[in-house]
Length: 273
Image 1: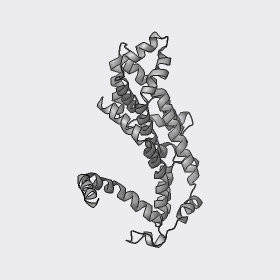
Image 2: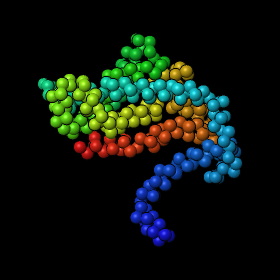
Image 3: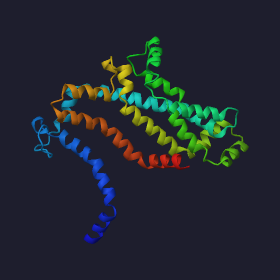
Image 4: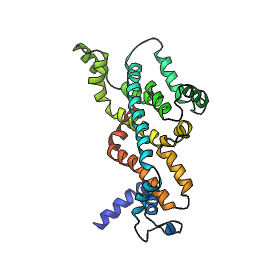
């Protein structure tokens, strides 16, 4: 048994080393979050006492529930709006034959290359005229117009679905919308899950967007903004900073843990095919 275990370790040595390299910072954050104030400033890596009260103290010293609520609102609504708007566009680019289709797809790819900082000022002025600055709506509402990266990934997957399925559905009397909903979408679940997770993770970790539009209103801060402010206020209390960081990371880790299979499958299919 010992020899078998050693052989397994030898065969997977590189994978084990990479896993330890990625898990090391997470373990360090978790251990520091459970230390006392004094020990967190020392070189000790293992807590002398397990201070679980650090997590409760965070909620007492910062409006963490408000930050979580705003982050969930931003992430979930932006993801839902992105799916509603991007799936029909990707379906049209993949299945329809119309003049200018290649040009439209080229424009989608071109928008992926445009840095958001280039158009930040004019877009900010537009939202300011609608009196929506100071909120998260300037980050959520544009998702109703689609996301270039999501459209690209979905289109790459949809072109691999044989046309025989949609043709058979049309023979049975299905229109384009019903064919999309009843035939294409169930087959495109891996790609849809992949783009949804990409969008959710991006919104959850986004700092630039909330800082630009909601940075002046404390009631609309997200976790990224709140953690930055919390770190500056409690920069000496690294145990509380690490505890807040761990709470912010936990939802993303849990979501990816349960959806990793379909996420990896979607990325693989959209990238390879």
